[in-house]
Structure formats: C-alpha cells, structure tokens
Image (cartoon, rainbow, N blue to C red):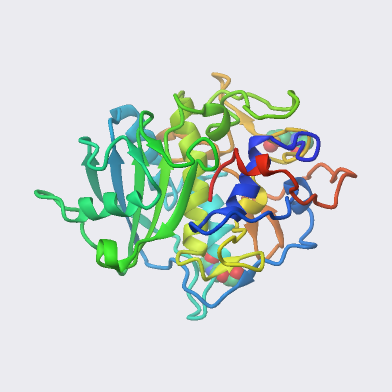
Length: 360
Ligand SMILES: *[C@@H]1O[C@H](CO)[C@@H](O)[C@H](O)[C@H]1NC(C)=O
Ligand SMILES: *[C@@H]1O[C@H](CO)[C@@H](O)[C@H](O)[C@H]1NC(C)=O
C-alpha cells in the first residue's frame, strides 16, 4: 500500500492505530508492518498464544444491535455477510476464507475458533438510547440497554454470545474516522452483568468513506496523493460494503483474541497486533504494495469482490494471518508481488500516524 512512500495512507495507519488502541490505555508507537512483505514470510512476526480462550462455541450466537436509523437494504447486506461465514457458496466463499484462517487458531483446551455462527437475536435501538455521539465505553451501555430492554430484550448469553453494535451513518463515535473504523473488546460484568466479547463497527458512508470504506472511496490521507485505487462496491453501497471489510476484520480478531489474552503479536496486551492487523489493505495477490489492493475479481457490473456469499452476494474481505503458513492468507494461495526493497519496517516517528486509521 505504499506504506513507506505514503505514510499517511489509511491502511498503514490502520496498523498503527490497531496496535495502539484496543484498550483505553495510552497510544504506543509501534512498528509498521508491511503487508506485502508479510504475505510471503513470517520473519519478524511473533504471533503468539497467551493462554486465553478463543471463540469456539458451536454455534456462536451473534446478537446484532442496530443503533440509529438503518435502511432495510443495508441490513440485508450485513446479515447476508454474517450468514455467509458458515454457509456454503461458490469458491472462494466467505466460509472458505473463514475456514482457512481464523479456524486455524486454537486455545489450550484444544478448541479451534468456531466455524459456525448464527444470528440469534437482533435489537433495534432506533431511539439512539445513548445519543448520536458515543464514547467507546458507551458501547457497553448500549449493549446493557439492549439486554435489559422492555419489551424484547436481547438474551444475555455469556456462554456463546458475541454482541455486535452497528451504528448508522449519522452516529459519531469517539475517534471514528480519526483513529478507528471499528473495534472489539469485551464487556465488563460491572456494566453489562457478564463478560462477553463484542465489536462495534460504524457506517462511514457519509462521514469518512475514504478512511473507513477504502478501497470503495478515494483514500483520504495526509501525505502526497496517488496510489489509492477506487473500486466499485459489490453491493452498491460504499458505507455498507466498507462495513463488511471492517466487520470481517473485527470478527477475525475477536474470535482469535476475545478477551485480549489469546492470539496477538507484540509485547504488550494494551497494544496487541492481531491477526487482521498484520494484513491490512491486502485483498488479493499483489496487494499491499504501491497502494494496490491486489488482484481481486470483477463482476459484470464492474464491481469488485474477492469472496462469494449466500443469496448470490459478493463481498470484499481482507486477508488474514494464517498461523500454520506464517503468512497473510486467503482461501487460495496466489503468487504475490515480491516485497519492495524498502523493507525493513519503519518505526512510526510522527504523532500524525496515530491520527487517521482503522480497526482496533
Ligand atoms: C484447528 O487448528 C489446527 C491448528 O492450526 C488445524 O491444524 C486444524 O485443521 C484446525 N481444525 C479445523 C477444523 O479447522
Ligand atoms: C489474477 O486473478 C486471475 C483470476 O483468478 C488469474 O488468472 C491471474 O493469474 C491473477 N493474476 C495475478 C498477477 O495473480
């Protein structure tokens, strides 16, 4: 992604923000990994297991919280993506992508990350229960409101539950569009009643598609221009197709590091580099270098995608770190562009690197 040439490219910044902010702890300056290099070698990547659980429930129950004003068509895209995680579709399917990367992670009980998700409940928070401007910690209150809602509360499911807070395009979130496009963490028993993994993903369509829905909008970054490809979104909605990318990223990380004590690289749990962070911006063979997303597929209508889903849907997902191969991976191994000579990774030296970015 031209990481060194374009140090403010959103995907590069993603990596920096990702290692900086899973918790509310201070931002740390971390090495910027070059995804194009990582695709071909595990050198210098210390992806390690830290003894915690992975998300292994079969099925794992997803509980969706639609926060704000949502259109039916947008919801259908996101529901179909979630259904595609564990349903067959023509190769390469979303379920192939999931089976060949997150599924490869295990915990000390011997359990693998689940291959089966079910949307087990949905809650509409159309009244903006906590306002149209949320802080990170408010996500837990949003979940609390959903599980104590009257009538129709969401189940409180401490065994197999994963909660997804999806905010509509008008909702502002702390650091959204500046440092994050989504994040995952776990609830505190003191707030929600139990500790369960959750993720938040925002619809960036009207706020910052160039940061959080890249490559479906021209990249907004502070450095010199150029390098960013703009692709047509497979479901015709820049904000929602961008959310699919971020949701895939967060689910992969949440499943392999739900309590932030399982799988990550780096030496501090307050700034873990997780399995999707390592492959930011890589969507196909040849991606990750010079601002390229890589070799993806194109539909007859000119839209771009790299995986198939249920109901004839197509989606774009990023590659993920495969622990067996020690490389960024996707269902099918492809020939990749050689790493550029600008390796090794740079350290970030500029506070502005923290200022844009993506997914914790
Ligand atoms: C579980 O993970 C192990 C270790 O990575 C892998 O060899 C195995 O194929 C995985 N099992 C499934 C069902 O994916
Ligand atoms: C890109 O993908 C197409 C279709 O899968 C394949 O034929 C072609 O060889 C790929 N190109 C590269 C550079 O990998």
